[in-house]
Length: 413
Ligand SMILES: *Cc1c(COP(=O)(O)O)cnc(C)c1O
Image 1 (cartoon, helix red, strand yellow):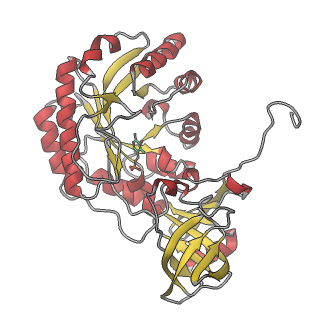
Image 2: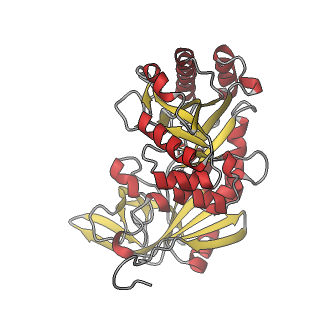
Image 3: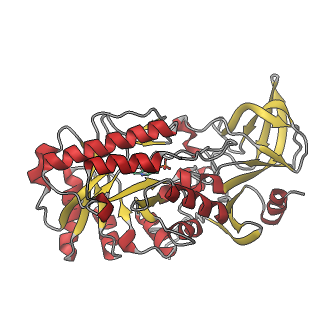
């Protein structure tokens, strides 16, 4: 029996296993790849499990600051013991209710994505008698690196268009309840290699310096974004960024001479790099069948458990490692989930070992964009169990609960 079949037997499947040792290693590696003056935000979106957030923001060595985009994520990072003063709140559709909750809990740093967004932050902060530091999120007119997930240089709900931002200066400064503290960039996810990541950061730093000049507002804070890559649901290792640190320092020296002493304070952000390889998804084989010459392995967790974002064309195909069978890959079959939709496919015509009902297969590198990025509620199955380990030690097992709570009518309590 392997470790994974043991855990599958003990906790059932589908199950995520997260190893905090790997979270700590990823955090250490990314901090080491950055100049030591830089802050690092952890995008809770990638995995808001409180124990992972606790490891990320506390734990051994330097801690990340939490980046959140909802009151649910706020609750998760507060549960994990994060200091609200460290939090960055982002997103293009922040409501007054959400802002009031965040501000009341002590969050003071916001990324704002439009003049209306800034005014709304200001209105709520002013009502509460506090000042919110606002980073203007910038959608640069141009970009460099190639990636599958690009969020800049195109019309977007995210950020101010860089070419028209300076003209908004007077509208943006002096909004009661706010202080324009600097800029926030997030041009891409999952850069294809270190060279393209560096090129994108250089570009961002250059655009930031130009905007600071054009706006005439000295930046106190500059978030240059991310793009740190990680394998997703396929075998492989996190990239090692060996030249990034020096390249970033050089580019910041050229454009922001005071950055080493906090003028501005500079930050990067990451989700997938920090948690991707900490997670393994275990699914159990329920049925095998053939249809018109094609084989299907039906497992107990599909897009309700993992890959609900596969509609975006990002993640297929997964690869699996057999556990509970020693057989090497020897057949081409589709790995499908149990849901009543033909879209419930984890991998179409992928290499699979000879499987039998009851076998467990593991999807590696599944620690980012797992349960909370899936169609958890669809077809009403329980959420997967999430088992947190550190090496051989099992620390907890939990499950996201979803049950109906009536707010009106039958069932009201
Ligand atoms: C999603 C997101 C991240 C995290 O992206 P990764 O590719 O997981 O590193 C960081 N910042 C912002 C603004 C995001 O929207």
